[in-house]
Image (cartoon, rainbow, N blue to C red; front, top):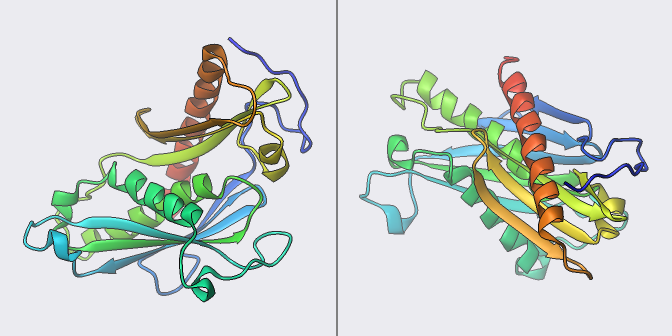
Length: 245
């Protein structure tokens, strides 16, 4: 087992999450809305219910969950151009929104939804590392609230969610594993990984890159263990937030 005794700039322990919060019902009109904060990273996740499915799914009796992701121009230290003004999405944006959609569909019974679509919009208001993991973790709550509303209205017979899902970043920094990297840690990490994990502890996706030096099996095991524990903590925070209203 790889151990890390290093101190972090914000005083956290190596295996400690940033301050996490969920503000449900953040916007007025969306069927599900939450402002999720991972420390100084803040993402607004809105869920919209549409009474249709994509053309390739029509007549199958199944629903669809999909996502869009964007970063506001002053989410970072300097202003970035809106991708809409460029006329195309960056490869990074496409990768992240596909990841969010896959993560949510992995824990949703699409057959139980009928032919409806839940569109999740994840807009990064402020970025300090981990925007994709915050988006997935918050998007689950927005999706839950949108579907719960349909059940309450009698439009769905049962809740289509099979499990919860959350995501967290881990990395190797200064020779040791750390959990939930902020921007400064992420930009100097020797290894950067993202884990998407269900509430029952199963993996949806694992992304990992060694920036310079390859990492060992022991380091991978240490990062995996940090991620499992971190996502279990996130699950409990999600449950607490959902029980607050």
